[in-house]
Every structure is written in C-alpha cells, then in structure tokens.
Length: 98
Image 1 (cartoon, rainbow, N blue to C red):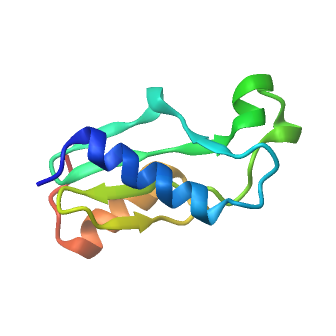
Image 2: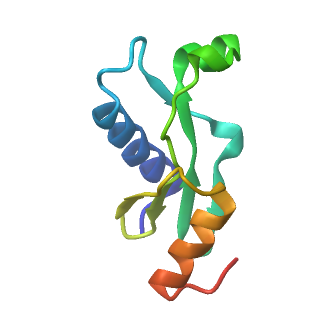
Image 3: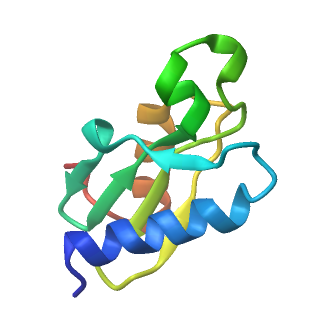
C-alpha cells in the first residue's frame, strides 16, 4: 500500500508526462483531492489557469486521475461529470462506492 505522498507523486509525474506540451505546465488541484477507500482521486489543470482563473487558460479533456493504493494510475474521461466518471470506474472495478 502506498502513502498519499507517493500517490501524489505518481499523479504529478503522470500529468507532467501526459501534458508536456502545455505551455507553462500543469499542476494538481490539491484542494480537490479526494481520499477513497481504494486510493485517491486527483484533479489537475494548467498552471496558468490556476493563477488566472480565466477560462481561456483552462485545459480541456482533463478528467480525474485515480491512483489506487497499489500504485496503479487510471485516467478517467472528461465527457461526463467527474462524479459520474468516478462512479462508473468504481462499478467497472467492482468497488463499493465510498
């Protein structure tokens, strides 16, 4: 089982790699991180957006990232509301909603 710090590091490395072409980079939105019984749900956006809060600086297609307690990283889609995407992930994985 990994710690929250390790999960945060995994999520940060994942978004940094996936979003390497975003000018100014990306960052996790710490205040939105959610602890679940099976791991953590992370949200992220462009660093520029986190500074300006201008919709023009926001990323598109940045669904939540789930890091399981065993270190697996899962990128969820952005087509649905995050709560719906998370619930679908939990159903698909046979995880009881928490």
